[in-house]
Length: 87
Image (spheres, rainbow, N blue to C red):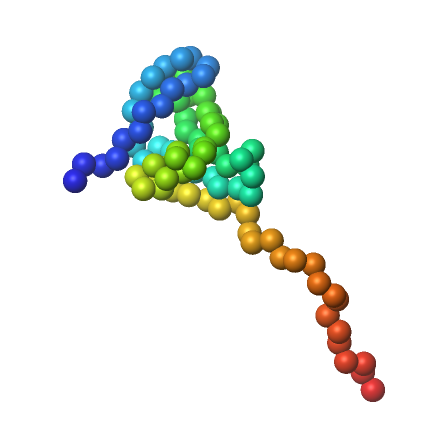
């Protein structure tokens, strides 16, 4: 089976190229704003950050891109823990 390759483009130099999964990083946050993928443009060296919707997340994770989860499960606030009084 051939290694996954992903088509990408650089907004700085407008270069278009293919990247191996190892050249990309996916960050999954709690919101759309904090969910993105990054790579370095092989043509101009710019660091590129692009938003990642559900379909992109599915493609990148399925293709072996390293993923970082930026959020944890939200905990519901509850009453403060009660500690027994010390004698």
